[in-house]
Image (cartoon, rainbow, N blue to C red; front, side):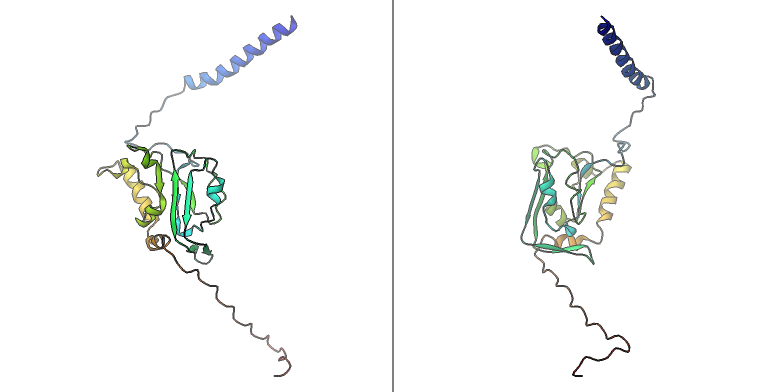
Length: 212
């Protein structure tokens, strides 16, 4: 009998705790974001459609291995090595770097293991299209156009809201000065050999080696 009443007490207590949280939101002021006239509210760590810096990619395929749904496809013509001085990778052409967003679950696990930090979660929230083919984004082809992230169909209109136009211009500006490097990443490039180290000068007052 005691257990019966204890279970009733716990049930009522649980309901009251849940309803207290619910009622706080019931009487809170509602806020409607007038999208698309104003931008959608994105949190600082929002994970949107990717931003890819192809000229830094070494084609190590760490992102492809980390992907839990196998939605990343990488093809390269040969070994690529990054020049630490410039942050640019050279070597075999990046033939293909594609992500199938019909499978992607935006977990962000692909960005974490990247040794050159060339893959980032972007701020695009919508990539709607008229067929499934638009869900597969070919980033190597975008690089030839000087783009690092896909441009949605709704953002290709002649007249855009002010915030959308500003965001589009920011994407273009972020890749300014790198268009040639992005294009070269899709072609074969020789890997620069490290410069030979100059012989160290003898210390002042040091004795010359025997035989001199």
